[in-house]
Length: 284
Image (cartoon, rainbow, N blue to C red; front, side, top):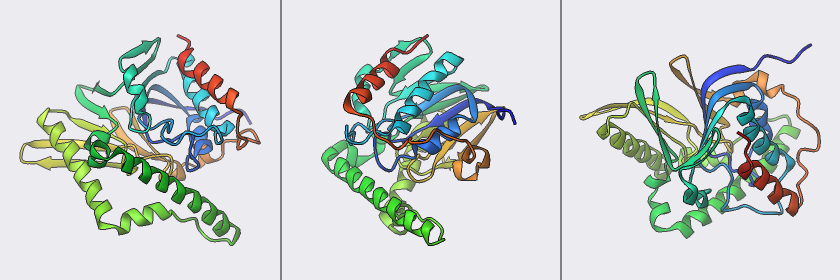
């Protein structure tokens, strides 16, 4: 049988991939990317986790994601990299342009006459603003929990049981976490309504969502692309419609074959040479 036809998508938004961490589902993301042909791809922050970046852990699958994304430029895909808190060092390169690739901190898009305000969302995180060391400590703890979760799920699969998400259970059971998500969404919506945007699109909180939020001053569609640690989700916009893509519901993507030995880590030289080549020598 020949290769299956890729889906044409007008706009795809990804965030919180966290390449370079144990929790990143790089292979699953790569399978998804191989099934689509986006006209525009927005990387909405925390793509490479520079907080926890370790030369000891950078599997070939993580580099393969970078190569695939930059390879889209040669296929006429426009790519916008919006910075997040875990890749905040790229903020000094805001407004950088080369060919169809650009780096910014935020973006306003016009979609069928409507305005979409897109940014990562860490600006609303009080912990990020006033206690960055605490936020980084929390990120390490979160990554450790994901690593433990991976081992637990490996054991559950061996026992014929369903996988679980420890971090998701913690979030859903802790009232302060639920309140944080609700406050985050409300703050984003309030500012978007005040500035008369039709859509406000964020990442950061690893909670995929699409809903209308109404206040006394108006209404806005709030969207969040989720992440590729727990939820494995993205936002897709095509033919005037938004939807939350969920990898776990996509049998076609799950069936994509990838090369063996993708979990092997690259050595230090190959990691940095590869990143430099892919991100700085982008072909027009």
